[in-house]
Every structure is written in structure tokens, then in C-alpha cells.
Length: 233
Image (cartoon, rainbow, N blue to C red):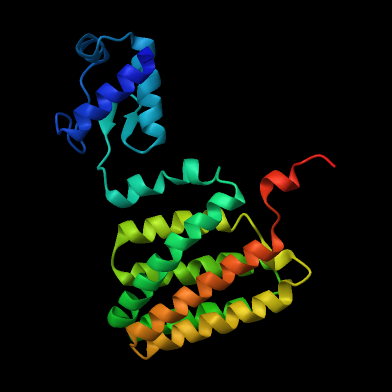
């Protein structure tokens, strides 16, 4: 194990065991170096790694603090690695997304308010009105994010946002078949929003799962695997 790894795992252990709690200022460098048996350079690199993961927060002139360690924030850091997945890996993630989107849709149907319904249908109308694929993609993200928010679990909403951000890298709406795909997607959104408006969790879950499965099929049909796309002739 390298000195940086030793420092990283040592700090992680201190946080995981509660030796350093959420929001707590970390001890001075010298003290930590002595406790962990590493140099200042190795310690600083380990701190940078933890900061990238959202676990600690360096504050200029004040020191380094353990973050609040909110689950939704820690989950959000998955985007650093999830965005590296090739299409084959993304399609495996879609199996997880189908289950989770169905769950939050059912929760949204049970918890939604008239304001929720108005927001969802307003987003659908904006999606249907735009000819800009990038704007349509952003509105699509907001539509699903609103459903996840109403579902009531910020951690789950954060995880789904990470999944959606990765899949948005593949812009299926820009393909020649884009207008037909968008029309089908808009129809799916209306079915889902209607189920939420009707406060029907079962129908909402089924609509969400079918919608995500459809997107997965589009990715499989229209996006070549990265390894094939990059292969020489």
C-alpha cells in the first residue's frame, strides 16, 4: 500500500468510525501525519481525494472540515466514476434505473399534489413545443427529477440524477429517427403524468418502468458499443 493510500484509508477509517464527525474540523496536519504515519505530501493528496468525493471540505484560512455527509451528497459523487462507463456498463445500470424510477413514480402518485401535476404537465408541454434536442433533453431531466423529488427520498433522487446525467451523453434525439423517438417519449411522459394525477401508484410504476425500458431499447438499437465505435477498420 502506498503512503497516499495509507493516508486515504486512515482518514476514511477515522470518519467511518465517528472519530471525526460530520461538520467537524480535522486536526492539524502535523498531528494527523504522526497518527497515520505518513508525510504531509501524502496526507494532502489523500485530503484532495476525499474532497473530490465530497467527504471533506477544505476552507481557505480555516482548515479542512468533514462534510455534513448527507447521503444525497455522497451519492452524487458517483458521477465522477459513472460517467466513465462505456455503453455496455450504462445498459447494466439501466436495469437498476428501471426499478428505482418505478418506485419513485409510485411514491409520487401517492404523495403528489395538484401543484405537482401542474408542474409535470407544464414541462411536458414545453418538451412538445421545442425543436431543440438539447432543450428537450434538459426538460426531460427536469420532468424526471421532479417526480423523484416528490417521491420524498433525496438520496434516491440524487442517485437517479447521476444515472440520468450519464445516459444524457447519448443524445438519441439528434439521430435521424429523433422526431419519432421524441414523439414516443412525449407520449410516455403523458401516460406517466396522468397516472400520477390519478393518484394511481401501480399505473405510475408501470408507466415509469416501461418508459425507461424503451429508452434502454433505443440505446441498444441506435448506439454502437464504444469498443466497436473506436475499433480500427
